[in-house]
Image (cartoon, rainbow, N blue to C red):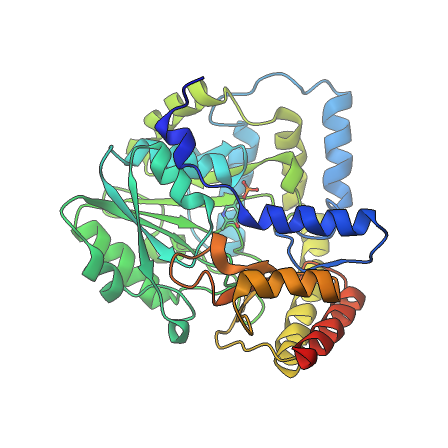
Length: 389
Ligand SMILES: Cc1ncc(COP(=O)(O)O)c(C=O)c1O
């Protein structure tokens, strides 16, 4: 069968090969420790679990409106007001099947074939695919370690071309666990708007931050509008620990909402209905308390890893203050290092290849979405392995 050019363009996740290898070792009874995982190791918070069970028992399983359950859009609007002191009308909030679908809708609504979109390198591997699905061309902008691997407006400006449509950023970012400062964010969004471009800001790791209070670009701009041509992406996957429920949201300018609604109607009809009802429980005090306790646990793990990985022979120059990732220098070629670390020390961390065009072979990502006990064991194994190589 003849396949489309697009299907051939889509890259596999190289890391999955390593994870498959790790799983095979585990199947042989070998106690692999996973520092490869991009999701919280905690279960869904209990009140959300209960709300999900109730939604199914109450037969809340039919389609909802394409833009999502009005109650949930209102709840997110209230959350922006209470947690971030920013007014975002519910009509500008669209519920999606995870941040993934929100990113896809944003790209389909904003990019014309042949247009370029700037992406920070390193970054989330799927972003280039979302751009390509719209016929766009991803333009990777190399970032600097001393800037915490986040781009400056100068770096983006140097890459701006007549065919550039806009910029897609993540703050906090994956694989780096670092954020853009609000002054840099403001400059980027402002300058991109002056060039008649769009900015998409992925805030999926927003509330998993450890050194400062959580931030949103919306605190700088207010709700997206003609003056601030911005789309903000978020998700219930990470902070609320609901990866498998596939639920997220996007904040869009009023003018873009009809296009997003048509895309949603055609491409997915609506997001998962029971998950939407369950997500209402995310904003209850008891759930927020659980999420806050988990954030503190992640912070303690981050502190432990930042202290102990360098002592185990891993060089880290950036300051990961968010998400659950540390982006570090591999002691030698990152693909070979991660393979040997897995086979000889039974620690599965991931090479940089999926995340970066420029640093794929030199950098690697550690995830600390694992228990402190496992992290301590993993670091000791890494130390022993590094001292022998
Ligand atoms: C930066 C970033 N954006 C988006 C996603 C997709 O998340 P979701 O589960 O909400 O689709 C991920 C998942 O790891 C991510 O790291």
